[in-house]
Amino acid sequence: MYDVVVVGAGPAGLMAAGAAGAAGARVLLLEKNRGPGRKLLISGGGRCNFTNAETDMHRLISRYDTAGKALFSPFARMGPTQVLEFFASRGMPYKTEDNNRAFPRSDKSSSVLQVLLDYIEEGRVTLRTQTTVKALRTDSGRVQGVELQDGSIDVGSVVVSTGGLARPDTGSTGDGFSWLEQLGHSIVRPEPSLVPVVVEEDWVTDLQGLAFAELRISLRLGEKTISKTDGKVLFTHFGLSGPGILNLATRISQAAAEARKQGQPAPTISLNFFPTLDGGSLDRQLQDELSAYPRRLLRTILESMLPPRLARCILAEAGVSTGLSGEITASEVPKQLRKRIVSLMQDFRLTYRELQSEDWAVVSSGGVPANEVDFRSMESKMIAGLFVCGDMLNINRPSGGYSLQICWATGYVAGLSSAEAARFQHG
Image (cartoon, rainbow, N blue to C red; front, side, top):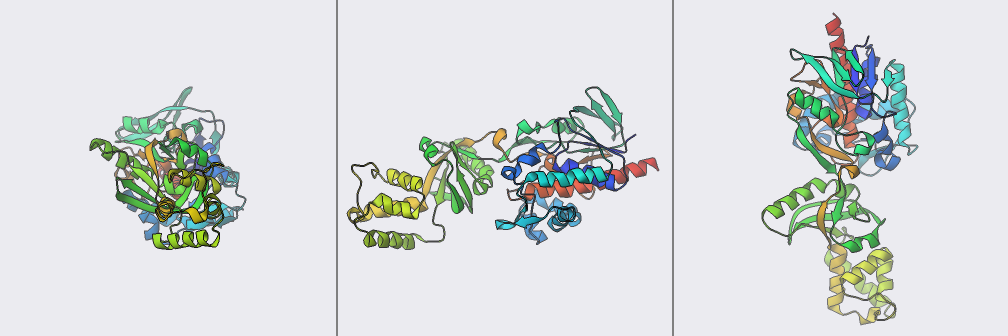
């Protein structure tokens, strides 16, 4: 009855099903949740950063680490330019923000999902929700169908797009990895990748909700800086989040593991709240403020330069009282204290404890190694008629629309290729 079965109605699966349907295949899309696109709806805080509008292909590919070169072929067919055109031509205007991040103009992820639902409807795709797949059925190195809880479906082309392990509450529980491993794929153990960081300092709860558009973030082992980046940072009740932290999370975890192995203290995360100024310039700026308002409280002056809660925290770290008694005025600030405050404003350190769990992860790393999939078609190199796409693939990617870009490109190619394979089988 069906030419192609797509398992998993997330972004990659919806794109694959729509592309296969548009190519003329009879497509069945299976989803274990009550509805499709559950994780998509919460992505980007509900706004959905649906791609990165980087037009330089080499620069784009470089963002995906060493395995990224495999993406040249699918990106040539559904790169960011084609993705933007795909959604815009289907009635979803978009906008681009800092670092080429693309969002629907509505700021609603439901706009993205609606385009995909219309796409599968155009392709006459049959969507069956609350349907759990138990296994893939193969014979002599070729896929034969899928096993369900209540029966089986015979089909010669299967697209697996069940996602990774990030946000298991949305249904991403790694089911597809166990099926593929049983069929001979060597699955790289999935771990949280783009995930917030828990720190040791309990006073960080006082800073919860503070967000900074562009900080310099340095990862340190002792006094040695081992990684540095600029990005957005959000303070949470347990530590740090935001794109700048998420993109550094895996490197932080690796550094912590190395420190433990060598018996060294845990790494620290250093935040520079004035990344465009050198230490001397910031010191002169603070001196000017102190000289201009000698009778003002030091706390008041710092609160004019930083968010008040952060200013009070920096003063506390510098050993200055912010209570009604014991506060000092600008004219009373000694040079040593001023230097200490400047240092804290540009080297504010928090101690790494651990990464948050998969429940907090934006994406997870791990999955099917790139060398076990033919990226020209997204077909498994081990099982004919089996196609793999989206977060099933072991390709590191930063935040900023890069993960969904993989989903659109590999899902699109998998959909077209699975439809073509079905036609070939039918002669």
